[in-house]
Amino acid sequence: MAYTLPGPLSREKLQAGKGLFRHGLRYDRAAKTSADRGFIPPAQMIVGRAEGDYVWDLDGNRYIDFQNGWATNPLGNCHPEIIEAVHQAHLRYGYHWEHPLRFELAEKLGEIMPGQQLPRFTFEVSGTEAVESAVHMALCYTQRRHIISFTSSFHGEGLGTKMISGYTSENNVYMEPWGGGVIKAPYPYSQNIPADMSPGQYVDYCLWYLETHIPSYITPADNIAAIIVEPGLAEGGNWIPSPDFIQGIRRICDKHGWLMIVDEVLTGLGRTGKLWGVEHYNVVPDIMVVGKNLSGGIEPCAGVAARDKILGDNPRASAGSTFAGTPAGCAAGLKTLEIFQRDNIVAQAASLAELAEQRMAGWAERYAIVSEVRCLGLLMGISFTHPDRDQMADDYDDSWVARTVRNEMLINGVWAICDTEPTVRMYPALNMDQQTFMQALDIIEAAIQTVEKGAELVGDYPPIPGGVTGF
Ligand SMILES: Cc1ncc(COP(=O)(O)O)c(C=O)c1O
Image (cartoon, rainbow, N blue to C red; front, side, top):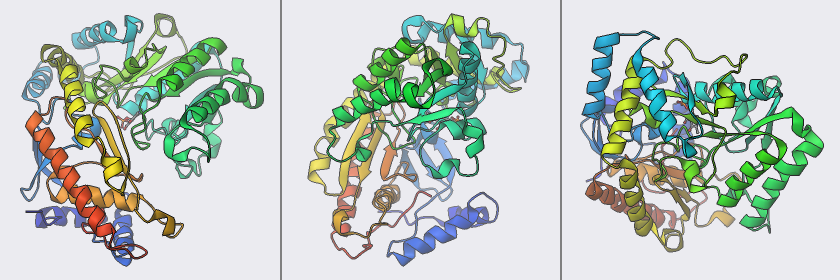
């Protein structure tokens, strides 16, 4: 039976949050908008407990976890071996900078970096700081002033990473003067392809823009330090780039003497069914940013790996912070890598991804509300649209449909992400039990069927059962 959400204990916390947190007032506004449009108010919950493949909300309802702490728990929730390793590090070192685990983890990471060509590592606490550190080291190493990033990209919420990210124009309002050195180039994702261009033509256009347009009209090639790219665009809507695009970036970087920075904060450590996302494209970057999975879901651990020449002696490239590379964070990283190796975690992720691909094959053809299924390993996304989109008001936002599906999934026991984009994103643990994984996919398909039936009931903003959520 479907849960009625939020349950009383979650509701109490959500109510309290309205007066406490950023966007507290937005909940009321968004709930009113959804009610005005005939949607059922958002389904939400607060996590009360997490273990393995599941989370339970404060009211005791259980969910299969496809949200994964925003893709941060590669081995499932609260992995006991990682908790124990972190505990031991706390007991032994408390907090000090000069501890042996940072050496051990840096050495291990050097061994597993793409092509074993990024032997040097600098620790940071979060992906945000690591991206900023990577960009700074590129500017200092090349002694140039510009960086190229992509529209729809997401690199974090720091001042620098906000400017580098390009997922909406709104994101940079009031900060325009801070972004002077960032050049935003188009990322060839399929829903925003200009009319009459094939996906392949658009990739060619985007590469031409990098190779020719920017150096000719924006700033000379020798004033550009690097291109930063996600080898699988996650937060910006789960878009999977083609080999032509990623390999084209490597070629252009080599031609112009630019560094290639790959942001693997979300794609790294098995999420895409290979250890690193770039392995799908057979390229070795000059600088690679890691975070999320490296912490094993227990204790923050992030950083930047780079070629010897870039980090070996780069005097202006300062980095790090007090809590970068804590004993506990490094212990979590070391134990995570040990379990990855021992239990063949990347192979497990690849085989779950194969099952998902078979299970979801044909959904875009079968269901009018599904516009595309896009997966690279367990970087999984389904984008949605209204079946009568052509007849809807111009301001109709397809994310309403996606949120409704996500809501329907939630009340039936699968927790996934739907942010501002018209996409439900799913990041199961890489070692999820196969039966649980398949059960979740059954629930997801049933949710799509329910919403599809409701959507046919029509109206300008049809009363799709399940309501909206995700803000
Ligand atoms: C690709 C990418 N880079 C950087 C970040 C920022 O990482 P953090 O939230 O750990 O600061 C994220 C976060 O989602 C991300 O997806």
